[in-house]
Length: 139
Ligand code: IDP
Ligand code: MG
Image 1 (cartoon, rainbow, N blue to C red):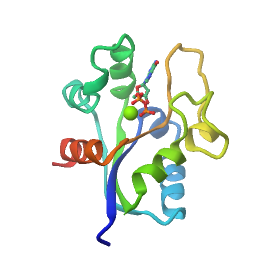
Image 2 (image 1 turned 60 degrees about the horizontal axis):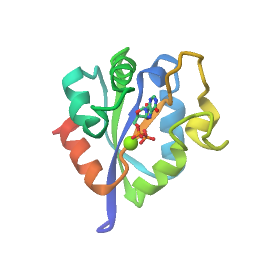
Image 3 (image 1 turned 90 degrees about the horizontal axis):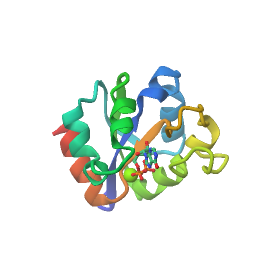
Image 4 (image 1 turned 180 degrees about the horizontal axis):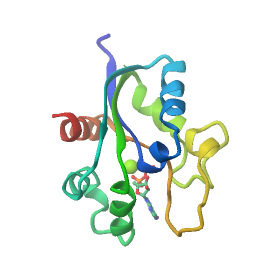
């Protein structure tokens, strides 16, 4: 498995609260990827500031921290060749309203009228991000 790669996947607090952990895991397993690590975790503001370093200065960041600390998340390391591209495709566009049907966000997400984006899952967007995020969550 020399060309295998790893991605950090989070089932975000809305996904855990809505009972969608099994659905997300089922989709990953059905696709043939391997769950190498899995843990229920409570994110802290400190961990999120590192995880979302690229977003810390953005206007939506305080609401993002509130969302991501509202309850536990399920953190996973998922493995397989091209799993980063594959999982990003499976997750769909950031905004569930724009995410295509067939994707996790497009099938399971909606606009809840809160003015915030609640989109069920996170997936690292590159091998560099994945290595950084896996070290943060599981290092
Ligand atoms: P991604 O999760 O699809 O990679 P990013 O642009 O990296 O999307 O944003 C990280 C997370 O920040 C999103 O999943 C979402 O929860 C939140 N977010 C991104 N853009 C906005 C926005 O414009 N308004 C509110 N929340 C946002
Ligand atoms: Mg991102």
